[in-house]
Image (cartoon, rainbow, N blue to C red):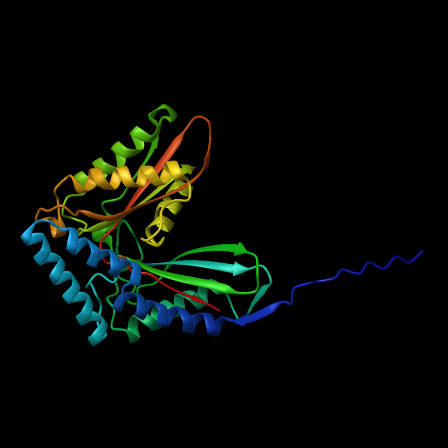
Length: 293
């Protein structure tokens, strides 16, 4: 007996060439290093108006001037053009052709950093030789499969003046919200002027240690005009921001009423025995740029 099974595919498979991905990554690397997202610029302008210290207001003025010059003259906002972190959301109906995705992305980084005259900061051996790779590769690449027929690429050049100030802890479940607050505020207090405030603080809570760290990085690139959709978490974001801005560190560490522009918290379910918390600090040069292919 012959049985014929017919499988109907509702969505057409879309083919995207690796060359297209390479070109997109190269352009995003340059754009992200030359120009900040509108929500970040808006928060900086807002903070300048709220700042009470005269020296702090002057610092904000210099920050805005730097942003204008970088955009106008097509030069990096900061000399530390970062280690490139790339989030790739791949629609499940997409088929990538012509080569490997990882190779295509790293080639794009190499081209973008050379064409954009961006500093190469990556060393091949993190412990011993620490020889510069010369092209700012490899990037740190995170991929996820989503619904649809498109690819979204987000390029995040992360400077290490702020990255170095980040922390990862596994708290006790009984530490609760108070423990999270204390960890975040203490992290910022210890960092002081080192991460070039005003800062943006990404906080990842839950999952496992690597999941919390990933959440904290994703929280950094969430729009600064939004709060966590959970009302309790949103209230926690507001409380922590108030406490941090009472530290008096101020813009560029010269003292003032604005130390942080935003506290963004992302959460994930976790084990009954733990409370992983990652605090990822970003300076005001919160660079990221995205494209959908």
